[in-house]
Figure 1 (cartoon, rainbow, N blue to C red):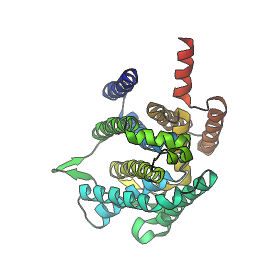
Figure 2 (figure 1 turned 180 degrees about the vertical axis):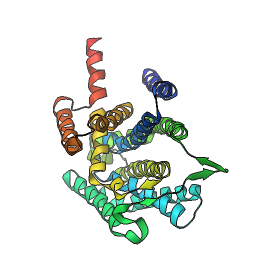
Figure 3 (figure 1 turned 60 degrees about the vertical axis):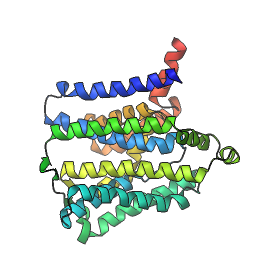
Figure 4 (figure 1 turned 45 degrees about the vertical axis):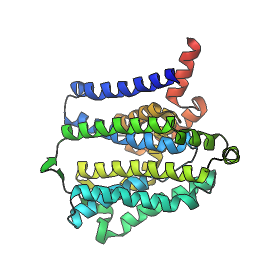
Length: 313
């Protein structure tokens, strides 16, 4: 256990070092923007990894929670004039309550039934955001005001880089603590065999709902950050393809690997930058990467590389 904790503490320290040193290698604002989106996606992937990698519960609609966080805070702050901090808290609470309400009936399902249910939830959110033009601006999107706190307006890529970097560290720390706690052990037992976990006295429904809500709130928080950072949001934030991107990040990086989820987010966020000018092939490339990972690296990139290094050692 001590060795495991040292490895995880070292991993968290490495993430912190990268965040601190990375600005030295970012030549302009464009690269800061890419780094911010890497951090945002990494936080969503770390939260989703708790649900998919540790609890074994698939979700193909997490972009819906991401979009609800963005639009919830944007509407409250922009349309109704709420203070951004209150709008943020209200959006997170609202998404948490919604996730709790839908989790119990949805998480009774298993396999492809669960996948289809979460897919339907995400599609429903995207349809509502597009259709309710009087509230959301519809396909044209809506403007979101700047985030102000204590008289300080959060503006500029450099400022948001450090905010997202700090949130990433906190998220990783929370995820590692959840994994090492009795909650994490319960989640792993659910993943291994839900029937055996129930026989052992584990309230599987409680833990599945709990991790579903936690991962949804992580996604919603990053939706809020995206809204205030970008200053403009569209229903594409809640699209099916965006949900698939999040799942692919977890699978490629390594399910049940917090740091693998971060690596997956880095790879899949940078990939569109490399495919500039070939946008029509982006979905195809994502699908090919997901398929190749499942065939050749079924445990994901980081766990597979770690296993080969251990064998080599």
